[in-house]
Image (tube, rainbow, N blue to C red; front, side, top):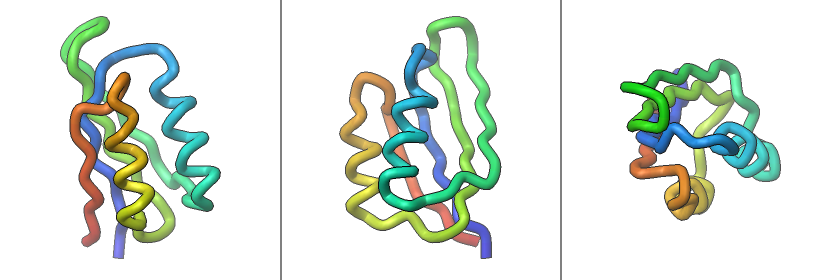
Length: 77
C-alpha cells in the first residue's frame, strides 16, 4: 500500500529543507512531494508519498516543527 504524510504548514522558506533533513535522518525516503498554497506567506498543504510507514516518533518530531507545521498526519492506503 501507499504511505503518505499530509501536512498543513506555513508558506515559509526553509520548510522543505527542514522536513527533508528530518525524514532523511530517520531513513524515510520521499517518493513524491506535492505542495499547494492559498497565497504567498499564507497557509499551505503538502502531500508527501514515502517508501514506508512513518513511525510515531518521527511524526511527533514533524509536529514539533512548530515554526513551519500546523498539522501532520500519516496516511496509509
